[in-house]
Amino acid sequence: MKKEDFLKEEFLKQFKDVEEMEHFLKELYKRGVHSMLEGEMEAHLGYSKHSKTKEDNSRNGYRNRKLKSDYGELDISVPRDRQGKYEPIILPKRSQISKGIENIVTSLYAKGMSNSDIEEYINDIYGFDIPTSTITLVTNKISEDIISWQNRPLESKYFVVWLDAIVFKVRENSRVVNKAIYIAIGLKQDGLKEVLGMWLGKNESSAFWMSVLTDIKSRGVNDILITVTDNLNGFTNTIKTVFPKSSTQICVVHQIRNSSKYVVWKDKKEFTSDMKHIYTAPNEEAAKAAFKDFKIKWNKKYSYAIDTWQRNWAELMVFMDFPIEIRKIIYTTNIIENLNGKIRKYTKNKLSFPTDEAVKKSVYLALNEITRKWTQPIRNWGIIFNQFITIFGDRIYPLE
Image (cartoon, rainbow, N blue to C red; front, side, top):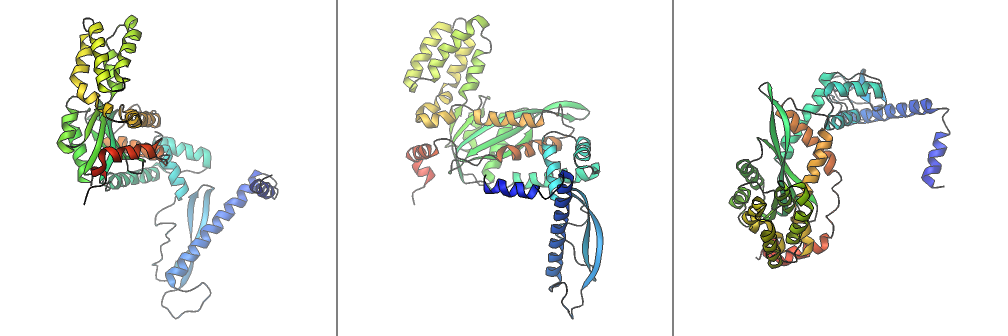
């Protein structure tokens, strides 16, 4: 038996049942809070509890406070001083909710629960009431966090930035309209991904993306080596206006979907198989040859699909200029689409949001939950990093 398991078993033997153990842990938690409060008071006054002092200020008994904790509602004796200047740090003024419960409220809100649903849930699980007004106070703090996060400085350069938008239904002027949350993910020099920000606007447009990219630049980003986007009309020109050196890759998967959209069912399997020879070619020359065959075979029946490939060819083939390992991470916007899919899971309980602020809060909290796991660099980062240095050496490490 492992030492940890043995100690756990010995600990549990001390109690008759779970209720007795929970009571013990509750009292232990209370004792810990009291000890911290006494320590704060000693630091505030500058002398220990039983020392004599000639200072004007001194202890003045206790006042009772209710604390909502993970162990239920606790009666806490908070020390007072005669001058009334002491305010406990661990129990801020007018606060009746512990950090543990505050985190639970925030997490439940992130998962799409309404304030009234959270109130009911906490009552069922923890056995005490938290007023809706208190829950609102907790969730309103998120707005302050969003402002701080959205305006934080960014790194001076990103190796890759994926750009995409996700649409939500939001109430506006007594009707429900579609609004887009614009999201950018950056690949940093250490191989880790970072959400650069989120911006709320109307349905996705190149004009709004201009303001997004300008905001990114104003927060310290001087260079983006490669951008990856869907094939929104005018997107490439928008990027070039703000980051002229960036290589702009249109998502090949979006192109495949758009090309196949109007193909009849009986042709779809053969059509997509032929199209695969284009984007899996070893180089652009081979891709052009595959496209020529594709065009001869299908142009008469599906000219629209052929036209979209021809129109977007330059941006679709950017990934062909790079080694296989880099190609895999830039030929598609899958990285950001996976993120959007997870955001959908967190917000699926919301058919529509009452305000712009509500949708921003929910998406921000979902991003926090999702990106908490982004602790490892992308696969094969050592190889990819060296490839980036070989290709973009002077832009990564400028010559002095």
